Length: 208
Image (cartoon, rainbow, N blue to C red; front, side):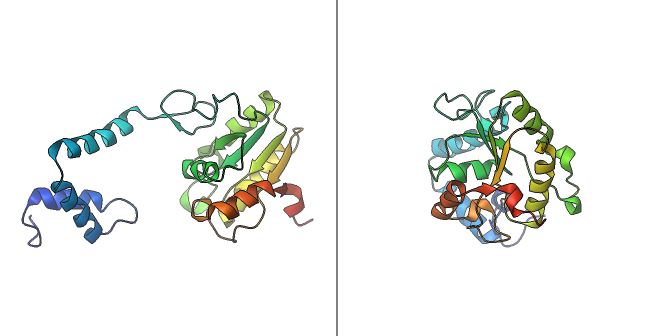
């Protein structure tokens, strides 16, 4: 049934779809849709095709699970990056955040989330086993735990630390310049960069 607030069912449907995006309310969605209607058809088609192509053709790196156009992402295939240091992050957004600091030149490992029993996410749903195998096979010298400083992030850090405990690898964590409960993607680049540079041994954060 057509909402009386909209003169077109097509307009209403487009607004509903935009409003599904995170942080987009119906007013903002309407503004975006009306903006697109003012553009040339070719520009709107290009916009739509870019989204469709992204969803159909995007890949995940077979090594670190970052998004990529090919089977191996540009970071993992870059010979100038340090092979021996792996930075473990929760999501692809965190890779982008850390890269923007220009303070890290190693490799990444994207878990795809954090352990959260309340949300039904256990270790088996995350890329933890592949991380352990990667550390074993690649003679990794250091694993940096760069997860958000939330209860779930800390739980995941500890779980990974226990899994790596019997492997000869240094396990560090980002310095607590990031506020407790904070998520990496919302941390300013300067603070995040310093947290990476001034990382500490993970074992030193544990209560003995």
